[in-house]
Amino acid sequence: MRERMEKALHKSDAEYTEIRIESVNSSWANFRGEDLDNIGSSRTLGGIVRALVKGGWGYATFNEISDLETRIREACESARLVGKEKSHFAQVESVVDEIKATLEKDFREISLSEKKSVIEEYNKIILGYHDKIETSNVGYGDSFRKVWYANSEGTYIEDERPDVVVFTFRHR
Image (cartoon, rainbow, N blue to C red):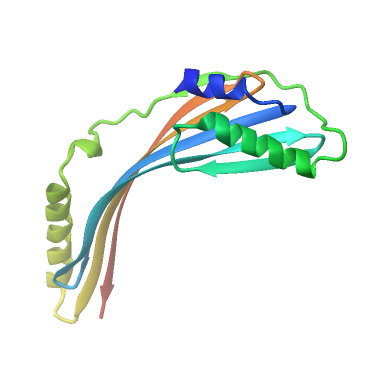
C-alpha cells in the first residue's frame, strides 16, 4: 500500500497533498425479545485525498483505490479553484510508523454463527432473569479498521483499530 500511495503522491502538483485510506471489516448480531432481529457482516474500503494550493483546499473521496492518481488530480484541480492566497506551513518532522493491533484472540477468526450463539445465550439469561421482563434487546458488533495515511512531506502511517461491543437492554 505504501508504494502505491507514494507513487500517487508524486503525481501531485499541489503544495501539499495527503491520502487517507480505510478498510473496515465488521459483523453483528442482534436479538429483540426471543427473535433474531438482524445479523450480518460487511467489508468497506474508501478514502480521501486532500490537496493544498495557494491556501485553498481541494478534496476527492473514493471507494476504490484502483486510480489514486485520478483522485489526486481531482483534489489538486479543486484546490486551484479555491486557492487565492499563500499557503503557510509549520515545520514538522515526517513520521513513519506501523501500529499493529495485539489481540489475545482474534474475533475475525470466530464464525458469525458462533457469535450469534453467544448473544443468544445472553439474551436467554436476560429474558429469564425476572418474570416482569417482557422483552429484550441484546446485540454484538465488531469491527477491524485498518487506516493508511501518507502525505507529500514523507509521513506514512499504518494503524489497526479493533473494536468489539456487546450491549443489552431489558424492558419491563
